[in-house]
Picture 1 (cartoon, rainbow, N blue to C red):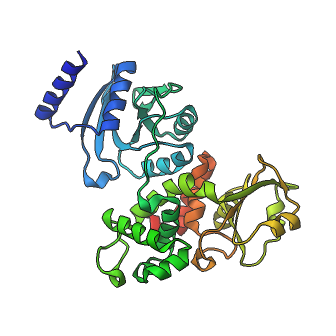
Picture 2 (picture 1 turned 90 degrees about the vertical axis):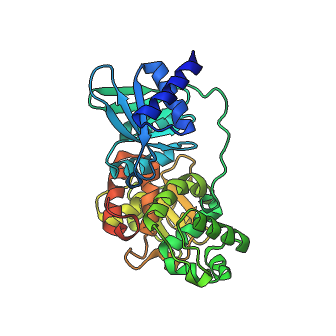
Length: 359
């Protein structure tokens, strides 16, 4: 019976102009239809909707069809939802994420931020005029196998991409200079640049003529992958502070540490009261810990991370004690906190229009 239905669906697409959905999306829509009885139609999205490649029309039992821009993801983690929500705001249709499995924590964060999703076991969040579906807690039948990241979005690749986004002319430098600048092995730098060329982010001319293309699209991808693949490896410790406003009087070694996350966002916009404090340092944090009377605490509100870029890369537009705005934006989006996501959009609008485009 299932096979016959699938064959009818293929014939229908040939006569109505519908497109065959991607594998994960197709399985997820089928699972959602089984649970809810909703009807789905899919068709190819135009290039103006990238990264969405498929449009999905959902027809409630009563009411008109609601159209979504579908984006497939090999996995969706809680840290990515904020960035995906910001992406959704800039598309003409609501985003519908499709993944093999969406766990309960990620599902709840997506619901809070208004991000739609479907997965292959029936978890779903769909919202529109006359439409509301929220299914969560259905377990994956088997562990989702890890997917191999493109070379540009491995931990080492993200270091290289960050340097390129902050200072695009570095692409024209010899590979050895890029390796020295980023602290990444020479062979890895070559593989990352080849990957960027293959993905259409960098021109394929000779070494001296390499140029960055579609910086906005690359920066969007970087902000999604950074919290998941690189940031966890940078954390050197969590601490508790003597009082919540300690950061306003903090003693930082000049040129050796900068604020990220909520504190940096407040310094850039004046619109956020930091509940958590994030520091990036170029040296062991011992002096900072002692001078500011911080004490180790796994649940503390103070997080210290290794700074992975050269201080000169921070950019002249940002205060000298603040991390590059692109990093601040990614830190805020990774929290998934609606308050932080809103301020992240201000950071984007005021400091990243030349990199990410308008908020």
